[in-house]
Amino acid sequence: MGNCWPNWVFSPVATDLPDGAHVPVMLAPVLARLAPRDGGRYLDLTFGRGGYARALLGQFQGGALLACDRDPSAIAAAQALAEDDPRLQPLHANFGELAGHPKIAPESFDGIVADLGVSSPQLDEAERGFSFLRDGPLDMRMDTSRGESAAQWLARVEPGELIGALRRYGEEPQARRIALAILRGREAEPITRTAQLANIIANAVGGRRGKRTHPATRSFQAIRMAVNGELEALAALLEQVHGWLKPGGRLVVVSFHSLEDRAVKRMLQQGARPRAAHPALPDPQPLWAQIGRELCSELEAQRNPRARSAVLRWGCKWPGEG
Image 1 (cartoon, rainbow, N blue to C red):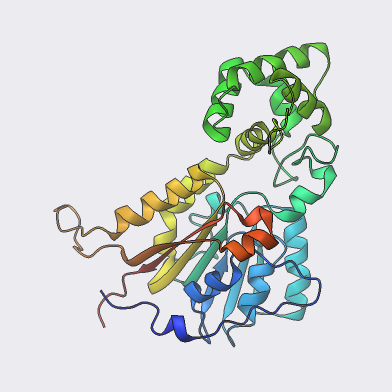
Image 2 (cartoon, one colour):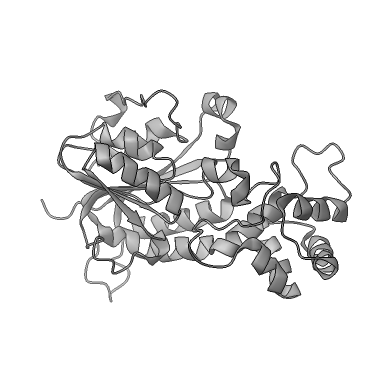
């Protein structure tokens, strides 16, 4: 297999951003693995605050960067950035629904990046309802222009579905106890605030009692993932993303949840296997010429506790003939 990143280890990567700008997780390795080149076309599937996009735009001349996000506030930020740099093209969309989109043509991108999960501004803004650290309306929608809020979902969810979501998405060992407490709570009054839900969960499991993490952490994560259909969107993306890359194109995905990382790992590993054993497939070459994994450095984890669980997985599409 050819080397998709010739001499990348020895090429310094500038990560300077404007003063006060949000520095995204694992920025330097993300840029190193994308290895942007002048005239290239790139796709940022999770624009967020624009940390990756701003840094990426500083790495190449000409070309274009399509900035996708399902959050209207993120797209507003992307549109503001596009006024200063016309290479940036905002796209308001869920990356799980991009198949067949007119701006996502087959084999049209030199590099694609995704930073999965909830973004820092979503966590930090109480009115978005993602965090129990700040009381706010129980919304949790990544796209506030569509779909039902977490409060609406909790008001109608069946017991089995709620228990299943807490177990699957939150890997919560006390899923049944927490679910029953939520169901009892909604009978007394509608659950509409983050602090209200957090208190119900904490009371159900006996409070924090010296634990490092709040007892509602796993449940909030699970409810958020259920409301937004995050794993389903990721599955849809992983079925399509290889086909959007040009031969030799690079995919970089940063995940924070074991279920997300497992899905990305499985897709890359299966695609890296020789396909000669499958006679129905016309091309015996693997889909990916190279794949790999990197973890957040100890220094970055100390500076940004949210980065501790970050896992970066990358793949380079088979370059084809010539």
